[in-house]
Amino acid sequence: MFAFMSRCSRLGRLIAASLLVAGPIVSASGYNLDLTSENTAKGLAQDMLSFYTGDKPGGTPGLLNPPYYWWEAGAMLGSLIDYWYYTGDDEYNQLVTDGLLFQVGTNRDYMPNNQTLTEGNDDQGFWGLSVMSAAEYNFPNPSADKPQWLELAQAVFNTQAARWDTADCNGGLRWQIYQWNKGYDYKNSISQACFFALGARLALYTGNKTYADWAEKTWDWMWSTGFINNETYYVIDGADIGSNCSSYSPYQFTYNAGGFILGAAAMYNYTESKAWKDRLDGLIWGSKVFFVGDNEDIMSEVACEPVDRCNIDQQSFKAYLSRWLAAATKWAPDTYDTVIPYLRASAKAAINQCVGGSNGRMCGLKWARNEGKYDGSTGVGQQMAALEILLSTMIKNREPPLTADTGGTSKGDVNAGSGDIGRKDPVATFAPPTAAMKAAAAFITLAILGGLAGAIVWLLFDETSDKKLMAQLKGSMANFKSALTSETAAGVGILGAGAAENRRSSPLNEKIIQPTAGEVSNRSSRVSDQAIENMPVVVNRVRSDSSYSTRRLSNMPIGWSQDSMSRNSVSRLRPVGQAVTTDDADRIEAVEPQHSA
Image 1: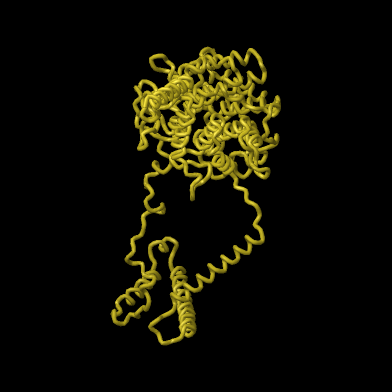
Image 2: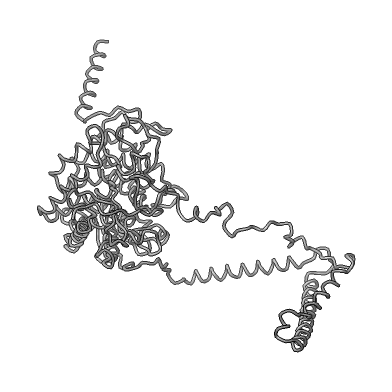
């Protein structure tokens, strides 16, 4: 007995010691686990994927169901690449590969034809950043007959570089790619941030200075326009080109700051220059505006979260600041001690409130000032943000991103994406039909014509008649010819009478005296006066009689709203107060500039 108790005591001490060595503990009904536990990360990833059906029968790889937009699926797959990088768990690798490759589009540059109504430069940019991470982390490469991760990142970059617009605001990318989409007249910071970060990382990975030159140009444009405040390093949302990008939408979102932090860290590592180190430090300092709470160290989407106005997109933004702050510490290691306390405090607060949903562990949006209470919101963005902030606390012991010179194996193509260079209108391109396709088309056409002929015969056939089918058809044809001859003769007589009457009347009387029409009316009246018993009986009329059917009042599909306003856009709430963003359903009201000269 005493020996058993002694063994239990030693076992208890061993467990306690292991937990203490592992790190701080978070107590929550959802996750009563160490923050560094890979089981916690696995649970968060599983719950995030509960919203994804792309790997299920009938699902589309790489797409989230509404209300989520195409870009967020690319961002989510990027989180699963991070999950593999941090934990080594390859359970979701095939799902990630399938989704990333299925959405590349005809020209393999993440411009699929079925996303033209919503795709902006920022949307495409998120897919490009995800495949760039795949290249840097040596995520398993696709088969040789498929596009490669580095090639896809280069394709996104090349198509965006070709859209650099100097005609308005002397540079920068427009928000939207296609001219008719709402927001084409707006230049937003996140489009620039994705392009900037992608160029900086491509420069670092490939050693090609051209990418770094584009990153420098993007930074200079952001700085000169005041999109990055020259004193505080705050990154605003954007501006309309009608004001020459001078009347700002000054709202700040986490992903704008995060994108520039990521790119600045890569540029610092690439150049080793003091200028880029100063820029990186300034951006990190400026990002402190997103940390609140008693110690001002818990991440919050300050433009919308405090007033409960974050839309579907905004609910995921904290994921990207978490991801990119951690990644920056690998390219600029001396930033680690500055960044990690904020990441750890935020991770504790995030996991502490993951106690919602039917499984008791779903995460909400609010991490700060909630005393561990679940706020009732659930979604892909909330799960992704909690997963990324947790993973970020494990960054110290992970290998730095690779380059082509340090072991990166992904293959590139400097000319990738050339098929879409300069394209502003989605023109679908189809391969010429093959012989098999032509044969199939001919067969289908013959089948349709045969069915149509059969339907006509069925309509003309009278089951009550003793005549054979062919005899009925001959009789129908004879009746048709006779009716046609009669109508033609009647038409000639009417025209003749009309012509004679016209010759007798003046142009003025022509408009008010129409005896021919009267004659026709009289003939019609005489027909109407015939006794009903003398009218012909129409056999089989029931087959084509629609007199009892109700005519629809609209050509819209049944059940579709008749309100044009409700059909034109996905319902995204127009933010109030600080809750404003560049989403594709709402425009941003411009305000006067608020930046230093």
